[in-house]
Length: 114
Length: 111
Image (cartoon, rainbow over all chains, first blue to last red; front, side, top):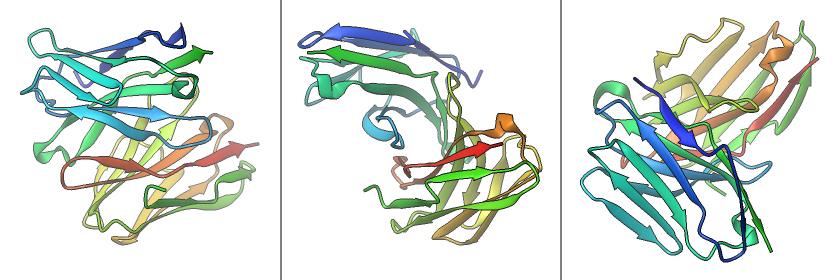
């Protein structure tokens, strides 16, 4: 029940395309859903996050769509650039007494061709 | 620069060695974590510390031993590791607003 399932495992788009990465979860106690971006040789860095009381959040070219009833959320990258090539992880967090445990998806390797 | 510093960045050790990974944070956060990142696997939570107390051990083998002497430092002591323990070990801290900040990781190779 703690799993977060992420797809696809890898994604290749042309510059300007709109890659979409999807995640699904089971645990209804999750109440915070961040996305992390990781470049080779670096630790994951927070990209954008959403709480289940909103259905969409946009920051720059990055948008999270959230469907609470389906227990799914997705990341859209508008006007993708080669510099966006990285591994993206979705995650889910259950607060309360779980002391901030993040459960991560498997990751998606995104390649944006020039 | 996330405010979470890990040393060493790279470590090669034999299976009979004892070594330690160090994490230092300057963010004033009270929760600190060790995660393991292996190829083709999700990030795996290993240990959680809150206010210097260990609050979670995620079924980690005893050859990994964490230590949190104060709220700014977290160590991961390693001994008699196996080649399958080779991975990127990430330290992280949590802001009260739930944002988790990662260090750049320590690449461990066990030979």
